[in-house]
Amino acid sequence: MVTALIFAGGTGKRMNSRSKPKQFLEMHGKPIIIYTLEHFEYHNEIEQIVIVCLADWIEELKGMLKRYGITKVVKIVPGGETGHDSIYNGLNAMQDNTKENDIVLIHDGVRPLINDELITQNIEAVRKYGNAITAEASRESVVRSEDGQQILEMPSRDQMYIAKAPQSFYYGDIMEVYEKAQSDGRKSIDSSHLCSMYGVPLFMIPSTKNNIKITEPADYYVYKALYEALEGQQIFGL
Image 1 (spheres, one colour):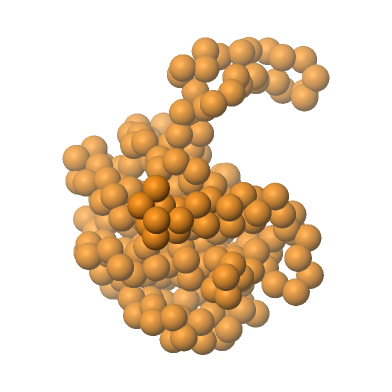
Image 2 (cartoon, rainbow, N blue to C red):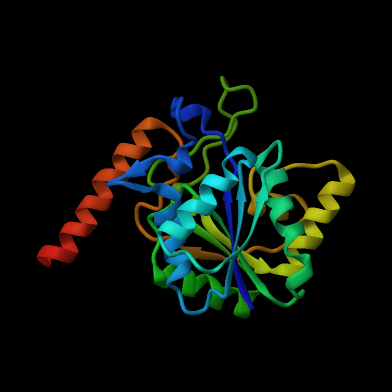
C-alpha cells in the first residue's frame, strides 16, 4: 500500500494572515491544501491519505474534503508543537492500517506545485533504493557559518541541492527513526534531516520546477503567478 502523509499543522505565523492558517488561504476560490491534496487524490498508486491538521481546523477541513470530492483521506489527526512532532503524530496514527513494507510519501500541505510524475518517481525510487528525497539543484552559492558573521566554508555550488518534498520511505524504516528520536529527545527540521542525523543513507530524485513551499506572503503571490501561467499553457497550448 502507498500512503500520502500530508503535513498541514502549521499556524503560518510568517504569512501574517490573521483570519486563516496559510494552508487554508484560497486561490481562485479554492484552499491551497486542496490543490495539494488533489495531486494525491488523482494518482492511481496512492491508496490512502492521512492529514495532520491544526486541531481547531479539523472540522473545517472535513467540510472542504467533502465539498471538493477528496475521498482517499482515511484519517485526520491533530498536529503537534513542532513540525517534527506533527509528522510523528501522523506516522503514529498509521500504525493500525499500515505495514512495515508499505510506502509513505511525506509532503507539505502548502507545497502544491508538484505533479503526477514526481509522485510516481518517489514511489519507484523507494522500491529501488529504499527512500526518496525530492531535491532541487541550488541556483545560488551556499555558505556555511556557525555565528552568522564569519563564513567558515563555501562549498562548490554544483554539489549543493535544496531538500524539498515529497520525502518518501518504507513505513517501517521511517517510523523506526522517529521512534529513536522520541527516545533520544531529538527533533529535526524534516524527515530527511532526521535520517541524516541518524546516519541513514539517503537517495535523491530531481524536483519539479518551482516546487515552492508557501510560507511567506511573497510565496503566495509567486504561487498564484506560476499557477496561472501553467493554466495558460494548458488552455492556449503555449
